[in-house]
Image (cartoon, rainbow, N blue to C red; front, side, top):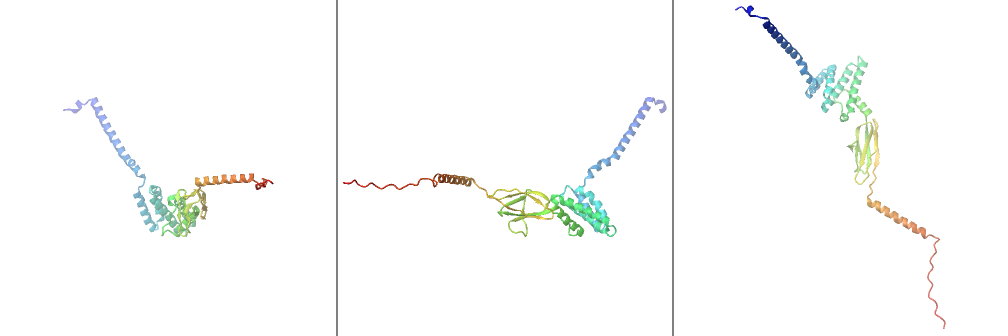
Length: 280
């Protein structure tokens, strides 16, 4: 059978259309495969806590091997990724600051300016850390470089002050911005307070059963201990007020009577005796 004789223009157009469709489908499939990796990579932009833990572990290894630049490059991206976990955030801050101080120490003999720049970066991280209320009591590790420990003391003295409150009666409760103050070790009875308080004004509330509440404002000064003393006033009940008013009325009446019977009033004379009997 002669195939050439059976072909016609309609069949040729059908074959060409089928081939074009097949090529188009293959092209779309290849484009979709090429774009698939970029579409699936987006959810991995937020690091998990496991990734932060791995970064911390690797950074400690780098620091122990003297690769402080590598530790810094590893920890800087981990800082925002650790924001969902308070403890991890504190660890990343401390280790990153420690890396900057170690780096500064390693180059201070060759470039004091570069060393100071790294010290300043570490100091800035310490300030950021301590400025967050839940991290205000953070401390450097025992193995941290001396320069970092000194920076902690200096920054703490710039940001915080202490409070010691002497209050009477000693049974009174004192709150600072809603937090109850406790007794401080080494202080005499009746003295309560707190350390590492952010400098600036704070609201106190002093209260005790049977006494009037007192709500003063105290201003914390950086690097100093503020020592206010408060004496609460006793409450006066209604019986006291009514009794006081009655006494005042009685006292007023007595004064009025005394004024009416002053020294100008006539002095009463004794009555005369009986008359003598008539004469006989």
